[in-house]
Length: 94
Ligand SMILES: [Zn+2]
Image (cartoon, rainbow, N blue to C red; front, side, top):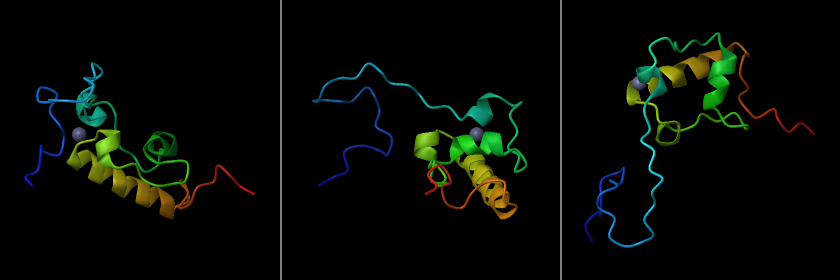
């Protein structure tokens, strides 16, 4: 059975199913806004890219490009090491 589509399904070729008008093209926010800098010393910014449990959000959800996702991952891991970000979620304690 051949693979139906590429990884990201294109909006033009959707034969059946309900057609969804809501198709938002994800753009890497770091590519779009050059003033945004990925900084491991900025946990508030990095926290946007981790779940409540402390997991790094994958790029297919975050919408980052490969280069920035890699930079981001590196920054998050570095921030974890110096205890700016949790390794495991801290929302639910107890
Ligand atoms: Zn990017």
